[in-house]
Amino acid sequence: LAKTTQPISMDSYEGQEVNITCSHNNIATNDYITWYQQFPSQGPRFIIQGYKTKVTNEVASLFIPADRKSSTLSLPRVSLSDTAVYYCLVGPFYNQGGKLIFGQGTELSVKP
Amino acid sequence: DVKVTQSSRYLVKRTGEKVFLECVQDMDHENMFWYRQDPGLGLRLIYFSYDVKMKEKGDIPEGYSVSREKKERFSLILESASTNQTSMYLCASSLSPREAGDHTGELFFGEGSRLTVL
Image 1 (cartoon, rainbow over the protein chains, first blue to last red):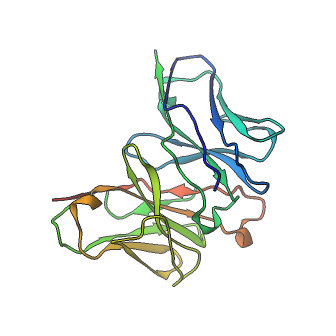
Image 2: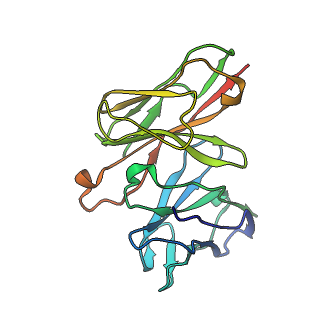
Image 3: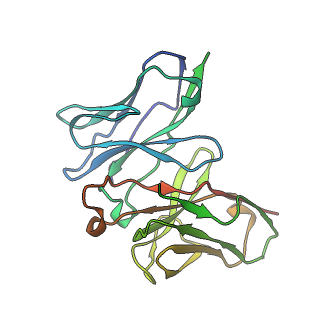
């Protein structure tokens, strides 16, 4: 199973762009990269998923280099409400076999 | 929107009690999962199910069992609660490849059940 490494915590200010990088050196050919967001006392919420290059939705962008050994979640113009823990996961598309592993995540703190 | 509902947000039980945590999803998903979340350990998979009456052990099944009698409901059972089972329990559901079509492979989580065992 591909293990991921991401910073334990990050600080930012409102209006800034935040980039959270995740390393996954032993990603498998059929693995996807998925990011989740978790607020206190709530379950994680899906943000974005990709396989290669760049994926963008209304919430975030996901940048994946050609070697796929890392990925970067980009949050444009963060607000206080983006304060949360962000998890990077690598694994099968539908979590078949429960193979997705949630690590400790990155605790993002957005300040006024 | 998909809704995953966990029956209790907060529970306090005593050591040795039998505990039932219920989870219901309203989107007819085949896959359902039970995780526990503890500080510094992330989310760890306890059990999962990919069909009615089917179950598979996750990474930490000891001390737990599950039941899936209907597609929409997945129950986690602590046969004899212990203090080291004090935790946040999270239920999730997802489509299976057979169901998914153009959808992403995302997990939909409930709000969690915080269990304290005294």
